[in-house]
Length: 139
Image (cartoon, rainbow, N blue to C red; front, side, top):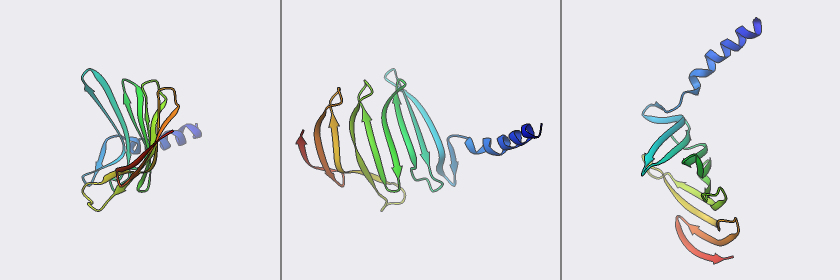
């Protein structure tokens, strides 16, 4: 009985913190789930925000219940994977944020990006600086 009371008390304390799609001081915070239908296709987006409204953690994008993109945010760097419809990785690389305008953050591709064919074979290496592709090397 004591364990049940402790478990119930813990749930009462934790559940309010698990709400999705919340704003604090006009900024998105915590976990966000958004769904849209465009041209008959279902899109679902799962995001996570820090209390300051900045991206954090793992973001996932789905089309018709198939993962299309996955972004992992660590500080001002995002590790991005984009997937083919068959689930294999299409593209992977990094992006960096420019926070010079605190009202709107801009993300730019940086460094080496790998581009794969539908079978998972590496096709190209692309190199970016501040979002601009500098060169492409066929693999």
